[in-house]
Length: 429
Image 1 (cartoon, rainbow, N blue to C red):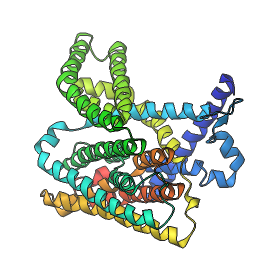
Image 2: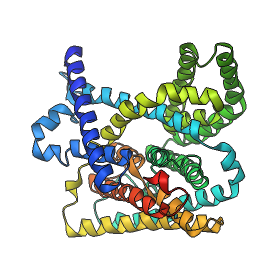
Image 3: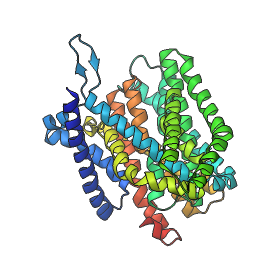
Image 4: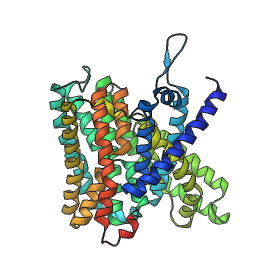
């Protein structure tokens, strides 16, 4: 396929993606009470093999080709059309998570460090233990893990998968509901960031075990800790220089914004290389970036294009990998319901009880548990990695995807119900 043909297809892909997202969002917000982010995830599933692939399989495969290209030498390479979409989606996600970090209330989390610690611990330990226990039963009762994966690797992987929270989706739900600067919104976001960081480290340990390479785990854990320390003690003072430049030049200029984007791309690259995913590099950079007028101008210049154009591509791209039709027997549906129950108890109920233990009231505790329970596309990402690396079979992949979709769909309507009659009710509309 020539470069010209790739560009032509890209424009058509973007047209269909944005139009579908807009239509589904209008319907979802009006009739289902869902946020934009959930509607965009549903749009991605609709454009994948689960719906469009059933209605028009040849067109769906041509528009979003998942099959690799076979070269003349017999080698398989990823389809360049999808590689381009993937690259654009990751760019949008990185910029968006930087903006979320810019909104992150670090002072509020400092004042509630005990509550955040309790919530984070509950969001890691409970789902991990339940997922690990479930993995031992699944290992011996079906085709869910390849032969090369031993019991302990299976337990680590499924535990890590249960620990995941839909960090970018949670961030956007909190943002869309106007809860970014609230106490419970900040606690949920802070705990989710820690939980997902731990989950990615666990994944690195699993991959290291399967590949017999401890360097993978050491790089992920060591690189993540080093990055956070460098961001706090070196990055934050250096970024204050950007504020001085903006004051001198009468505001955030194109040159200053370009410098900041260069730093952002480097941070995303570094955390991707270490194995803890680019979104954490972007989020931490946003969290240490100066606030005030400087932060407001940066957000003003970057937010609209990111949320309305780049970010939907990420959610749709991830949704294209979902094929719900693979769960087709009563036994598999029973296992799916079991996994769903474990997920809700391990994250939602445990998060609610942990928040109550941290002396939040029951309503806000339930709100935090609801937010923490959403898995969304971070779950899809870790599942896709597991499938590509041969850690799980397509059957378990599909079951876990269904769990991720259901727990994410639950979040918005339950959140709206919980916020009724509170000071945050207007934000939930």
